[in-house]
Length: 231
Image (cartoon, rainbow, N blue to C red; front, top):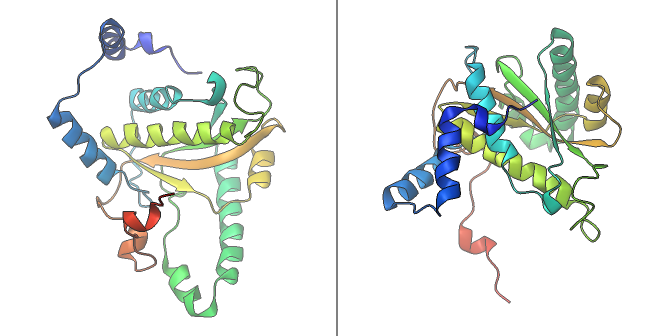
């Protein structure tokens, strides 16, 4: 369970200020925010150093303040810490990754096999993040036409978690090479929960502002104008 934000004196003080008057963000803050965006990376190489629990709690609270459709807050965080659960996740990844490797074009298989795609063996803290598709919170507002908005709300929570982690010197990696139904069974979650993300959290071994897949020559970023259409 998450502690109330008011239980943290620093956060409580900040919230009191926010509730008193609208914030004015300085140019210096905006520059730092841009830097944070650039240094948020999908981390796969972690130190095994333990993370203080107060930092884990702060990152989770940041996630829980994300926007959600109909204020449904459909995110559900399962902290995966037991030896049995970790082994099940690693086996799931290894078998799913073998299938993904076999599906690659022959010319790219060797390159794919050289990539490090997860930090499951090293990351000290790991979460499976689910969407509660059956939640009654929010009374269904906004999901009649687009039920996937619940999952998008969970993605917003993950992104806030990612930025909060980076702001505290932590790295986070999102592992998607997993069989979601198998993972749900292994973690014994309710049937109406759907997996959105499996997250590895820890101190990064190395720091970069460019994506690892770009450095490895797998894929380059595309220019923004190519992704913006006008009608």
